[in-house]
Amino acid sequence: MIKNSILFFSDTEKTIRNYRSELMHLIYLNKCEVKIATLRNLHLKFFNILYCSLIISSNMRANLVSLSLFFFKKKLIIINGLGRLKEFKLLRKIFFCLLLYSFRTKIIVQNYRDYRWLRLHNVNCTFIMGSGGRRFDVTHKKKEWVVISRDSKIKAQEKSIVSFASLFLNNTNKLIFYGIDSDSNLNKKIKSYSVFNGFVNPKEFFLESCNFFQPDGYAEGFPHTLADAIMSGCNICISHKQYIQLGIYKLKPKKSVFKNFIMLDSKNNDKLSESLSSEEVNKKYLLAIKEIIDFEL
Image (tube, rainbow, N blue to C red):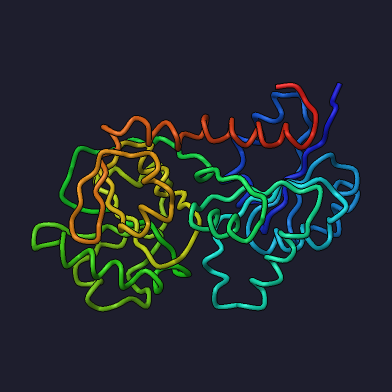
């Protein structure tokens, strides 16, 4: 007999299935009914929302709707980055007030900088690092550097990419971009040392190189692709600022420092990999859910 119905709510169904499918399966195994609603089909899912035991909401627009319209429901709000709200001061203030004065709500924050900021402003929240990484096959080639981005991110990341290239690229290696086409409106200098593979199956991300660079600048929460690269055993390069803001420094990984960049060898950082595994991360989400509604684990 099903005791609870848990509804996942986000911008699109694709987002939910890409990043919450393992958590949904884990919830189902614990004899809970799992449903999905999105901003687009919200009017069709009214009764699902009304009668569900818990709403799990993620992505900024969905979180705003969930906090303002579903105030009467038990909710788990997942925040994957507040940095993108800094240009919209009024919206950020509204969102902060909704968080501060919400009730029947548990708040999960995936970025350590955002977690510290919210705690400083008396918002009761919990830090969970990301949504869980996936393990993909990795080549043993080590010259090129993989960058995974998209058009909506890349302009904000250009400065970081140029800075990285000046330190680590030469005539014998290049950047391999996924999610970006060669005709993208990119800095000409970046194009000169880059190969663009467009959109591929995520299983192909690390088949041309085991080196992964995570550009800074977009102010997201914890990048899913960074978690995937760490779980796959790649050599990782991130900025020192990211190293602190993402909370990776708290795990005290083995690292090398090159000016403003941190190098991490995922294969020799077991604690880092274990902390970001989808199994470990989703256990933490399941425990958070159990604190809100009563079901047996």
